[in-house]
Length: 444
Image (cartoon, rainbow, N blue to C red; front, side, top):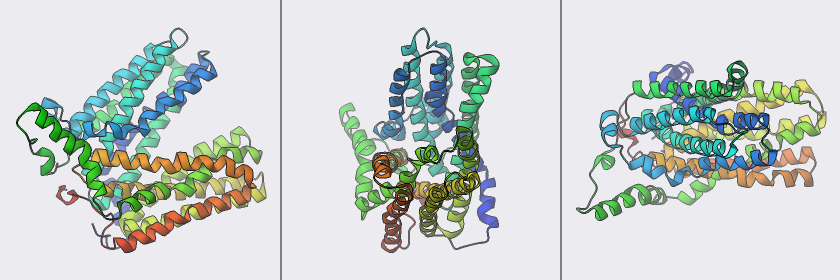
C-alpha cells in the first residue's frame, strides 16, 4: 500500500461525505454509547442511591473487558453465526446480535435497584461491558474491511466523532433523561439509542471476505475440524503477525507512539489543581471546549493521512503532539491564567487528536483482513500499555521534578516513538504498513 500522491485539500475533506464514512460515524456512536453506562453514569447513579464509595471503586474492574477483548476476539473473527451469517454476512450478523443483546442488557440495568440489590446492578454492568467490548471487536473489523486503504485515516476520525457523541448521549444525555423521567426511563432511552448502530449495520453492505476465511475447515471428524479451527482462528493471527519482518520493533512502536502524550495526560488534572484552577474552569475549558478541539484534531489528522500518506502524517502528528506538551511548561511558569489554559488545552487536544487519527489508521493497516478482528483487538490492547502501565510512572516523576521539568520530560518521552517512525519509513519505504494481507481484495 503505497502512500498516495498529495492532492488538493478538497479531496481529503470530501472523503468524509462518502456513505461509507457516514456509516462508520454512526457505528462509532453505537460503540461509544455503552461505555459511560458502566463507568461515569453508573457511578453517579450508585452514589445517588447511597452505595459506598469503596463499592463504587471496586466496579472499576468492569473496564477489564476492554483490555482483555483480544482473548475472545478469535471467536467473533472466525466463528460464523449459522443462518444469520448466511443472511447478513459474518460481520453484520455479529454486530446485529451484539447490538440487540446490548439494548436488552441496558434496558435491564434500568430495572435493577442498587439500593436494594447492588450486586444485581453490578452483574448487569459486567454483562454490558463484555458485550460492549465485543461490539468494539466486530465494529473495528467492520470499519477496516469496509474502507479503502486511503480512507483509513478519515475512518479513524469518523469513528472518534461518533464515539464521542455516543459517550455524550449516555453521560450528559442520560443525566438529563434521569432528571426528567427517572433512571429506568434514562436506561430505556439509552437502550433505544442502540438502534442507531443496528439500523446503520442493517443498511450497510457486508465487506468482502478473503477466500481463506470462506474455505471449509480441514479434517473429516469433529476433533480434526476443531483443531483446524484453533490453528486458523487462534494461532493463525499471532503467527501471521510474528512472521512479518521486524514485528517485535513494530510492537515497540505501537506501545511508544502515544507515550509522551499519555505521560502528560495522566497528570493533567493534578496539575490543574496545583495551579489552583476551579472545577468550573477545568470543566468549561477541558471537558467541553477540549472535546471539540480533539474532534477538530482527529478530523484534521484524517484529512492529513488522506492527502500526504500514513508515514509522513504519523511523523508530523508525532512531532506536533510532542511539542504541544511544552505549552504545559509555559502554563506552569505562568500559573493561574485561564486564557493561557484554553490555549494550552486546545493545542494539546488538537494535536493529540491528529496523532490518534494517524495512529488508528496505522494500526488498521497492520491488520491482515483474514484476521482483522483478532489482530486489531491485540494491537489496540498493546497500545493501551503506553497509556496505562508505562504512564503510571507520571505521578512519581511529577513528585520528583517540578512541573516545568516534568512536562519537558514528557516531550522527551515522545522522542523514541518519533525516531521509530523514521526507522519505519526507511525499513518499509513502499508500504504504509509492513503487511496488509488481502486488503486489496476489498471491493469499493
